[in-house]
Length: 325
Image (cartoon, rainbow, N blue to C red; front, top):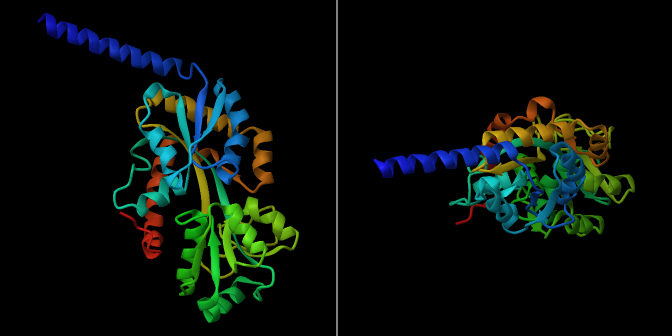
């Protein structure tokens, strides 16, 4: 009986400690894991978000870049962290949708092995071509590519990235098989498009707009459902005849699986407060990011959204032959 009583007391103490952690969290600086190298689009978003989210959360946020394996190395670290790790991940369509279908034995489930916190932003993509490619509209591009696909190439920021899969989906609709040239990041891939060594790319608005406005490349279509204010005269693929074509990269915040509901609620509320800040929204607008609307910021919405994105990208990943052991 004494052993049973002692075990019960220990269990009660453990529960009390967990409750205290949840109530006090965060009680020290929090680490934002950016699962890609510094200088890329996700890292840029993390650094834009950092000061406003720190203020809303009431604790300093320290960014730690943990690249590797298409962003899954850093994401896995967060999924396995303790409840009191004071750590969360800024995930992406690559780390929390596409990667799941690329591996026969995934390292983690994008939703179930985390505590989803909040959707942050959509990052629309553009279809862009080198400046001397003949087509000037999406319809002309489709006709041209069907006739010349055997000698064309497209680039991306790496195999399995959103820029790769977006072009794969476009190629599938056109019924062509264009050679893919993967790079170690979207920047180098886009540089070769500007240099004329690549025929086309599906890349971030934030990367593409300055080059489009400078006449270094041609933008033929927004690949998201809505036009971007940065290029208001550029029609979407949907407007140009590819019905319901809608491809955007996106980013979201997730805590370790061990995190408590109270931690999720605190961080989710802080993210929502940050996204309502006019200065932050202005910085998002400047690079073409679309902040999450209030009805898209909750944990349950994010969990359901991730599940739907995993299902959405499974087909294109398989069609592209990206499934690995």
